[in-house]
Length: 464
Image 1 (cartoon, rainbow, N blue to C red):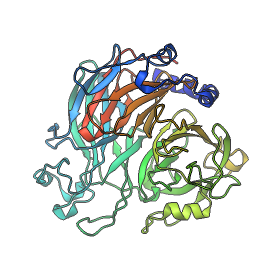
Image 2: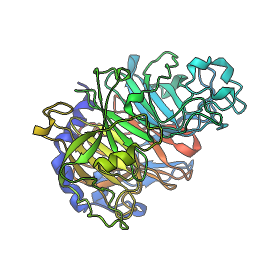
Image 3: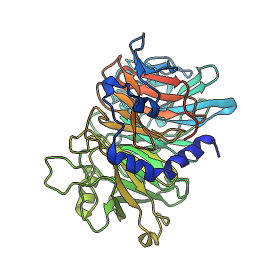
Image 4: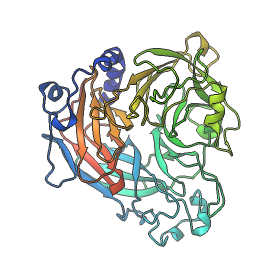
């Protein structure tokens, strides 16, 4: 077991402390005057002005831009625009395999094939999910970077999934692959050859390898955002980026083999039909209280390829709970965290925590149901605004990327103290994809609209 895994477990075991801390938020200080001792102790101290005007970081930290939109990769294709969700995997001799999504649409001139699609001919139609009749191919998908932490350099880079649309986030599997999610439900026609709204699996590989673009249709066709996988059962949890979205669970027929099919279900609050968790002021529904655990049940749902893109509507009618733009998702040890970007009374974001049943996905699940908790809802954009991608740091803190024109990377300690870890000062666009290397020595993050991927290093904490 790596120290990274051990420290994530420490975060989980401290969950009771975290919940108590979130109730008070007593260590909060305004993000623009981030100087009090309490916050310095919680995080890494004040953010210092960057001479380059791109990213402010605490003392002792530095960043390096390791990829830019338009860079020619090792395989001859171009690094795509709008990098989004990411995952890291261990390579040989300490190298890091970094897989990135690209949230781009057909017709995007900043895709991997060049402005005039001059590189598309390098691929056979079968290597591209949606060839777009040669004129409107999917420009989303994934790229893979092989990063050497010792030298701080990218040693190899390549296109690893081609022809998909608006690949937003996804999730790392325990069997060394990345699930890439399409945040788009376009149908075939008007230039597109295939339906969209699916997940795709991309193996982690140091060698240049374009994955087979096989849609995992049994996982549902909807506006996918992120997933996370329970390593014990291979159950996949999924978020939906819609203002009236649901939380989904996919129980595979065969562990570690998602392409073999399985059962799709939607999350419902036990004994509370069609519960609304969004807590918006305008809603005339009871508000979901913070830090209260609700027992959960999972409802089967049919017609999962949803030609009418109505899974969320049918699921809600059946009794599923409704969420406000489910986005980032992360599996710790025995717990799932997910962000709802515009949930809450001020619509500035929520974080939920789901604890699976000890009999998750089996007939005995009703004996000890899983529980859902509104883990975090500050309702103050100076504390947190529009949380999106999230991860758990090696030292146990929850690390959140903000989806906002003036975003921060925000940390939350086990005691519920908030702190700012980074500030985007160079571009009015969101942070995306924040994730640590397997060693915990590097935090990778994207400045999405600028098409940049950065590696941040510094005196990271190693133990909780």
